[in-house]
Length: 266
Image 1 (spheres, one colour):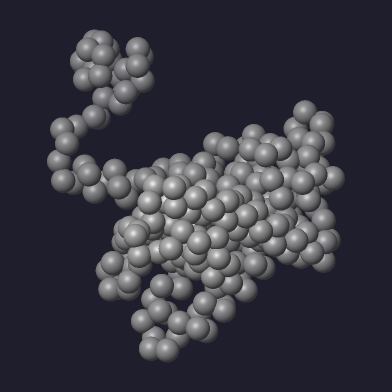
Image 2: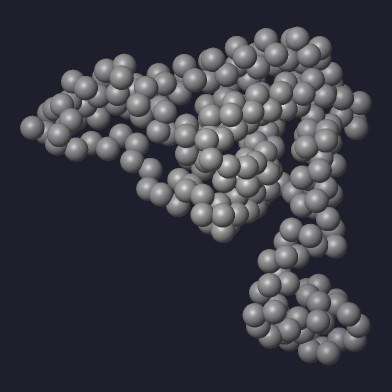
């Protein structure tokens, strides 16, 4: 065999020089379909393992990933992109309007808005609502702004590691935990999409979704850190309040700055 990647001549199923498979074929439509399907249900079952783990035992999965057992799970950022793609495709096929591919008009600084309005509470709440309602930008924003509140509130709780150490989650580990939690929310959103076709179901489904998402977050931290459910409820509630306040304060400061700049330019 001649390796198509490094031109090495060899015998066997894989190139001993670069590791590429001898079955590498010319790119065709069937290969593209197989690659796409294989990304989700490949031989390693990473997608299935991660999806089932997030639904059935979210905290245990996150703990295993954080302490180093990562061969059987997708990276949470990769998983989130996969779920976002699946959500968008199913939304499109069902004809359900989704804001994933829409432009995000956050802080649209146009001449019709007076600079003084940038600092108003109504303006901040309107832009905060616009941002958080978007599946992609809203989720990533909440994840980023939740890292410090969660890191601070859960700093006393530790997880045991294979080397015998018991350490509190650092900021990066909290970030990955929040992304995994967002993956769970994306799975719930995707599973509930067909129900959105039922007329008048929006309000009920929204309530069910937020309740389910909140319950999963509480369960995740119960299993991850081994804490009581009531502690998880209280700490998660306080953490989300601090996250929203931190988010709103940052948006407020940006709006103030934008208003000042807009005012000076006139």
